[in-house]
Amino acid sequence: MALDPDFRLDRRLLRRRFSRCAERYDGADILAREIARRMDERLDYIRITPRRILDLGCGTGADLLRLAERYPEADLLGLDFALPMLAHCRLRTTPPGSPVGALVGGLFRRLIGAPPRATPVFAADATALPLPRASVSLAWSNLMLPGLHDPLPAFREIHRILEVGGLLMFSTLGPDTLRELRSALPDQHGERVHRFIDMHDIGDALVKAGFSDPVMDMEMVTLTYTELDDLFHDLQASGGTNAASSRPRGLSGKKAWSEARARYEQLRTAGRLPATFEVIQGHAWKAAAKTTDDGRAVMQFHPRAADSPSA
Image (cartoon, rainbow, N blue to C red; front, side, top):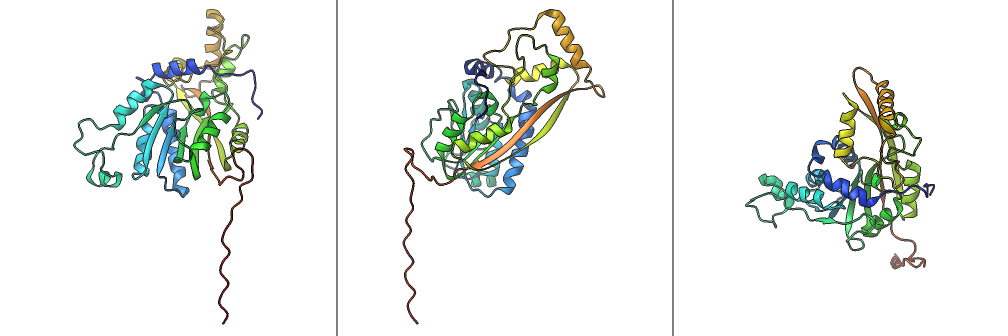
């Protein structure tokens, strides 16, 4: 896979940032909510009745509520690497003081208008999932992948925990994301904007991890802001600032910062400043294995049909 070996993300820094922004995340996740809506629409055309669903990178749990509404009979699990995010997730998915017992089924809960039952959540990294092999029917991941400089280890873990016939559904961001900001900021001392993985490299990683029939597409989504500081606020509040290990520390003085603002200001249209996001959505299936973990071929034997009785 054509990934830059010199590019690495500081996962500890990412975890600290996402932990700090847990309190205000729900007010700044506009893009994630819109992408979740589009991902959910795609499920209208996919035939799957999942037993257990994992929301990988669940944040504060907004997508878990959406998935519970679509699949009321499925068991839901939430996983995130930032523990404070999960604390908010529990508050969102646990009905305080609910008189309805935890054993009431999901469909019955909907019929009687009861709140959803508490969803188990786990703090863990996407590259080391605390779940057994073939234990999940649907793995859902909305904008978790931009936090990885190499998606292959995570894809291998997702493939491991999916059952045969299970589905991975994901979204991520491509290289043209924040292109306006990238061009406006000075680059004499290194990249100042988070780098994103190309769609074709994502596809290569899916195949290497063992997934079959990967389907992906890309579209540009543009958010607009009254002031540049509003964009910076959303990026910080959603944990979306640059976390590359090689990132430069600070701008090159007030002059460089003022020049960067002026360059961005030239893009203002109809009183608004644009911020482009290259949104990649995709899904892939776990097919039956053709080889064992040690490389031996898997051979399937089927009983021969009995001969038809002679007339």
